Each structure stands twice: as C-alpha cells, then as structure tokens.
Image (cartoon, rainbow, N blue to C red; front, side, top):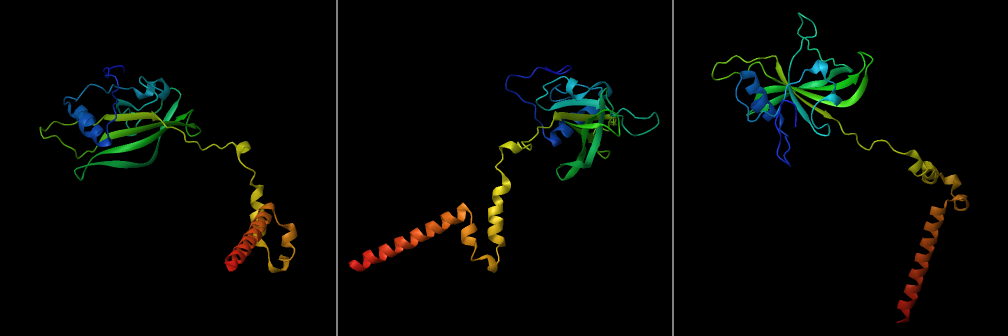
Length: 221
C-alpha cells in the first residue's frame, strides 16, 4: 500500500500508458476533476531519494509533485534531493491523442553527489506535463505547477562477460594463417597445417576412396 494511496486487490498491477497518465490522471489533477481512483500519492522531491520512496521498488512508482523552482525568480525546476539530483537526458517526447499533442514526457537520470561531478545510477524518472494549449470545456484554468512522475530502477542486461569462461581467441589464428597464405607457401602448407586442415584432408581422401569403391562395385554388375 502506498502512503496517501489505496490498497490494490491481489494480482492487480497499475501499468498505465503515457496517454492514460496524461488524460486520466494528470489532466484531472490540474483541473481539479475527479480521478478514476486515488492511487497516485503526492511527492516532495527535494526530500526523497529514489531508494527511500514508498512503494514496490521492483516496479514502477507513480507520484504527483509540484515543480519546485530552483531559484526564487527563475523558471528552472529544482530536482536536487538529499543524496543527489535528477538530470534530464535526451529530448522531450510529445504524447499524442487523436493525432493531437496532449502532453510531454521528459526522461531524467538520478546522480548521487553534487553536480557536475555526480555518479550516475540506474534510477530513471519520466516526468509528464500537460501542454499549455490543453484546455477544459468548462473554462477552468489549469494548475500548471503540477507534474506526474514515474520512477523505476532500470534493469541491467547481461553485458558483463567473464573472460575466464570464454574460449581462448588464439584459435582464430589457424584460420587467419590459412586465409593469408600466398602461392609461394603452398608447398609447405601441408606440413605446417593445423589439426583442422589435416582432418579435412583425411576426410577428403576417405571420400575419394569411397567413390572409387562404389564405382568398382557398380561396374561389377
């Protein structure tokens, strides 16, 4: 159970699409409309490191938060926490509904320490915001300081290879020498060839002998 949220039934997983987050959760939040369910709690980002958040750290966690200004009279958001900071990466992605843009998604990565010498972690945040041209039919003015955040721990792939368990790559030299032989070394190649070449030659001779025996057996009839 999330703090400020609701208890989910067994087997239920909250996994909305980007479009659903914008239209069914963020937009009602901004216009003070009713929600489908009170499942997304509020978050004060400056007091919350990602590993201390309430919820299941093995899954995506969703939060509403207000855009805290970094400076009193500035427009930049403060994304610093107790142990580090969130840094934006890449370009913002537009969320489309019925061929129209309804929101934007910003991707951020969490760094421990102080900028610009922080250490990158595997914590990712998607920050959703409503486009300024989105309006309400009732004429209600939206509260533009609210955003919706999805925070999750990126799963690492099996990219680290144990070199002690990998076959020695020196064996490829056999094929390299074979391909790089010139015509002058043709006569000496039979005595210096690898085991693979010798096996291939023996197999060839056995095949020729088998063909000869087959032809003799055929002629006898």
